[in-house]
Length: 399
Image 1 (cartoon, rainbow, N blue to C red):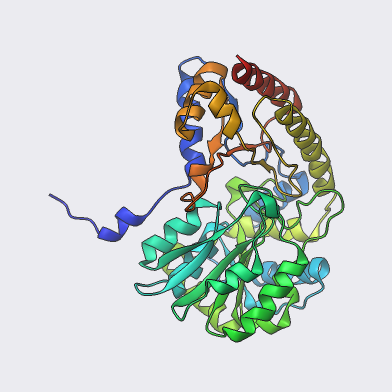
Image 2: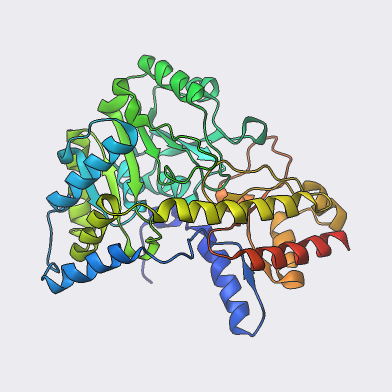
């Protein structure tokens, strides 16, 4: 019998893909499914980006590249970050990777080992906890509560730091809640970290251009006092509807950037050559697709939030960013006589054809956590289908 490494048993998965697979299986059986489970934009990649990628192939850009990416893209990323955040970035501190996940994985692998502690947002993107466990480190959850707008509390985070803490993962704007951490909390966290020089930071800012109502993103790049221990995660997937292109960027101090590039060499060799030219056009070219996408997403959000809040036993705050809703369905579950979130989601799926994730897909519930939440993604579904899905779900709950 084959014996695989014990570490594989600690590796989780991206649970939204499991929900998607379940929905697709039912669709294959001929059932009508309204999929609110996967956070993927249904918009087309802007034409000028597509053309840049095609032209790169025609020009013969299909071989290996440097492990840290082609110079043109690293320079374009540095210029784009300075344009958006006002912070100077050395192109040598930019590493181009195939998507957002490699930056998460590489950051955790650099700091995670048995005996180390890594803090991560909970509820949060499930890959954080998965790779922390895989590394052998102890995952320490940062509780995100609805009464705080699903933002972290700086005092609480700082109080959780121990001599074993190696890395703190921050995600604002956030998946699955759409929460945005206020600048005051970030200021307080950064100030408090002066007492903990042994702790590094991974700031996942993949949704940094997806805020509503004119709210401005607060990037950790704007805090020079932590730049020597900050890894920033950014990418093209959400902003430019390029999820399948697999293109991301890690920004880190030189020593850490070199380690990320080395890990990328061992894991991927490099990021796909012609895709990187599409990335150059993405950040340097026409940006008009971004506000257009945000306007459409805001319309979808408002419809869904209003309809959810009209359902008996459901309450939903209106997220300030990203494309997720995280409604509280505690009383709705009580109405249906259901005390398990997984059962609630499964019964809803079969009764209504509406597919969605639950809070359990985004980290272990915290001690004393009594409310029940689900997550709807409104990124890949039009307004008509949202209205139909909300009607079906609301009628089922009201039965």
